[in-house]
Amino acid sequence: MDVPLLSVCSTTYNHVNFIKQAIDGFLVQKVDFAWEIIIADDFSTDGTREILLEYKNKYPDLIKLILQEKNVGAAQNCIDLITAPKSKYIALCDGDDYWTDPLKLQKQVDFLEANPDFAICFHNAAVINEDYPEKNRLNSDDLTPEVSTLDNLLEGSNYIATASVVIKTNLIQNLPDWFASLPFGDYGLYLIAAQHGKIRYLNEVMSVYRIHKGGVYGNLGNAPKGVTRIYQQNYEFWKIINKSATISQSRLRRATLKSIKNVVYSAANSKQIRVFLIYHYLLLIHSHGEDYRQVPKKILRLCRSAIRELRDHLVHI
Image (cartoon, rainbow, N blue to C red; front, side):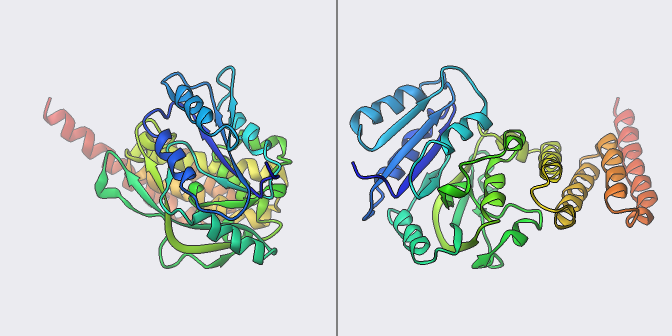
C-alpha cells in the first residue's frame, strides 16, 4: 500500500450505537489518493471493540486499530491517535459523529493541496440533539468567515466542528505536555495549527455532530447548571493556554474575559450564587476592575431572585 496522503482519525469509547454509522461514512468516501482509517478505542466495554474488529477483518489494508489495554482517558487516547499517522493530512471524526458527503475528503484535500499557506480546512455541520430535537441546528451561520486565522480562534469561541476538520499532520504531532490537561482537545489542536497557517471554511454541510446522553457534553448542554459547567471548563481551557506561554497573554485576554463572563451570566440564570460570586471576583481581577460598577447591582438582583424562590418554596410546604 502506498504511503497515505490522508489518515482518518477517530476516537471511540462505548459508541456501540453509533460507530457503524461513523465507519460507513468513512468507507463511502470517493478519493483519488491513498488513504487510511485509524481508530483508537479507549477500552470500550459495550461491544464497540467487537464491531471495530469486524470492520478490521473486512478491510485489513485500510483500517488500523489502536486498542487500549485499559481505560487511558480521552486525552491520552487522542494523543495516541494523533501521533500515529505518517500521512500529510489528518481528518478528524469522533466515533459518535458521522459524515454525510462522499466527496468531503476529496474537496478538502484538493483545497489544501492547492493552497499550502492554509493549515486547516473545515466545513459546516448539522448539530443533532437526540433528546431535544427542537434544538437541532447548523454549527456555522452566515457570519462564519470563509478565511480565518489564529486571531479568530482567540475571540473565545470554537466555531469548528471536530468531524468537519482536515488538518496538516506535521503541525500537531509534537504536542506539548500541557495538551493532555485541556478540557477541549480539538480546540487546542486548532490553536496549535493556526499559528502556522490560515483556516478555510467550506459552506457545505458534510457531517453531523451528535449530542446524546452518553457523549462528553450531552447531558451538560441540556441543563442550565450543565451549561455553567461547560463555561467553567472553557475558562480552565484558557487558563491552561495562558500558563503555557504558547500565545502572549495580551492576545489571550479577550478570550479569558469572555469565558469568565459566560460563567457569570450562566450562573446568574441558573441561580448558582457561589459560582456567580467566585467568577465575578475573577472577572474583576482579569478586567483590572473595569466591571466593578456592575457588581453590586448584579449581586443584589441575584440575591433577590433567590429570596423570592425560597419564599415561594416555603409557601407551598
